[in-house]
Figure 1 (cartoon, rainbow, N blue to C red):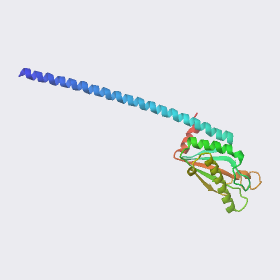
Figure 2 (cartoon, rainbow, N blue to C red; figure 1 turned 90 degrees about the vertical axis):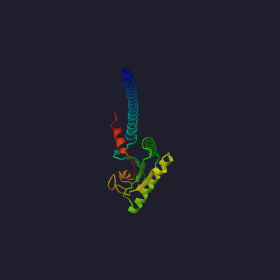
Figure 3 (tube, one colour; figure 1 turned 30 degrees about the vertical axis):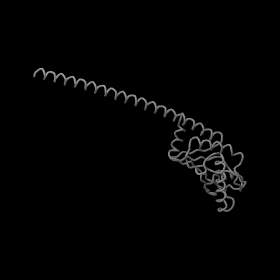
Figure 4 (cartoon, rainbow, N blue to C red; figure 1 turned 90 degrees about the horizontal axis):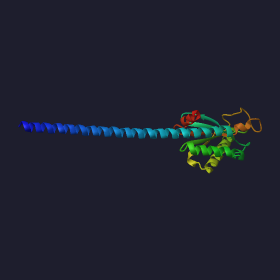
Length: 208
């Protein structure tokens, strides 16, 4: 009976020892798997950060080019970015001028590269010459002409909407026709709207 009890005790001890070893092995494997997953996650995060930094640097380069080469004024807000270009129009005319096409081409490229899926509003303006109703119509036609040009460069039609503001928001107050500065009032402005657009643009502006 004592012998049987001893045998049972030894068997129990062996079972506990085996269980402990199995548990220890399981824990070691779990810890090892967790460490592997953590390392993989850290590596993926590091790659994502590096890719984001590269993208932001590229965006900054393109935004700087829009400013220095084409005189664009760029304003970043939370969910939108406003691009004011020196894209102007002849008096009483709504056709895109050949000298403005290079700036629009570059702008289209920037939109396609960095603002995919964004809603772009083309805002048209006129100088104060003529009747207000006519100027409103003319400013809409200018916005439509620019939209048509950008669609021809590969931007989706549904991503672009147009609006005319007539002689509102004049750059050079009262300048009309052939008066100095009147051309500045005959213009278009672009507003790019998408979640985080302004934040991403602002980040790019700060990238070194």
